[in-house]
Length: 218
Image (cartoon, rainbow, N blue to C red; front, side, top):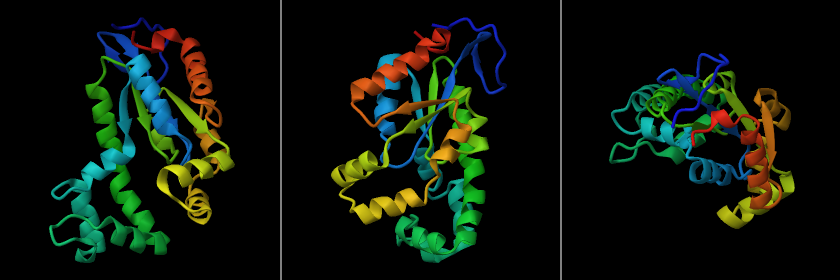
């Protein structure tokens, strides 16, 4: 059911017969618990969920534009026998050479955000949440509002050790290569603290959406 919206916020609003649904961006570091927030938004509020990482993976399948661009740049050494990209081999190459990583990002990111925007437009009859671990202006410009999911460092490490079997060293290494808290906050309109229980997180989400009920499709 469409909700009335009289203010004209961003051009990135998606409309339903002249009425607007929100597009919320969700970002945060590894182990922050973004999947929990996505589940709440999807199951309780009916949001359509778009995960930028999954979109990127789909675009790296053989025959897709990002696949062709990356293979042309890095060469056949990143391919498995069946033609699929060997993600471990590619990661080893680009993480050892920042210039190559930057080049791969420049080839793939525009394609990912183009696909994300298209999918969001296709679901313009309901609210949408876009999740990505990397905050950026390009990401922010696709959303009406950006939420930063904060979780304490200690809790993130504990969760990663339990859910993924990471060592302290591996968890800390991954976290060190992600955006800083100040960088996340610089793009965010609101913050959710997910260091506690799921119920506490739910209450924060409810409060954020309560501030502007007409952003949420009932």
